[in-house]
Amino acid sequence: MATVKYETVIDAMWDQWTKGLENIAEGNKQVELWTLKTLEQQQEFVSKAVEQLQKVDKQWKAELENLQKRTVENLRKTAGNAVADSYEEWTNRMSEALSKLQSLSVNQSKTGYTMVKQAQEQYHQVITQLLEEQKKTREELQQVSDAYVEQVKSLQKSFAQSVDQYAVVK
Image (cartoon, rainbow, N blue to C red; front, top):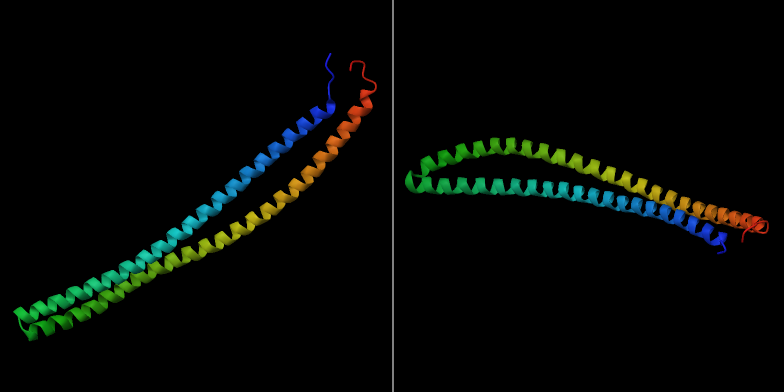
């Protein structure tokens, strides 16, 4: 009949338990990494949206200015200076009004994006701090768990040895 080595069974049982805890900890670490990566991607998206808004704003102004210049030049050639000057004065006034209206619209969008960006940065800081605290807690738990497992294993092995001498079947 085979001899049962209780110490090996005890070690195997607690090693599996420890591996299970390590797998849970690894899963938590992966979720933390995904969370940080997602937050960084969101921040990048907002930054790019603000850049695009500014780029469109500049492009719109440049195209409008170019259109006005070409129209004034064509009017000078075809209808004369008086008509071109009148049109230019009228378009300058319209441009000012459109520019103010467009500026209000763009500023409102910029303000919205800026608020979202600031909120995201604050959220990112809070999440990062929370993840750091979670990491510390996980490391402390790992140390306590390892010490506990070693104590239990030692206790169980001592108990198995003390009972082993009274075993009928070996």
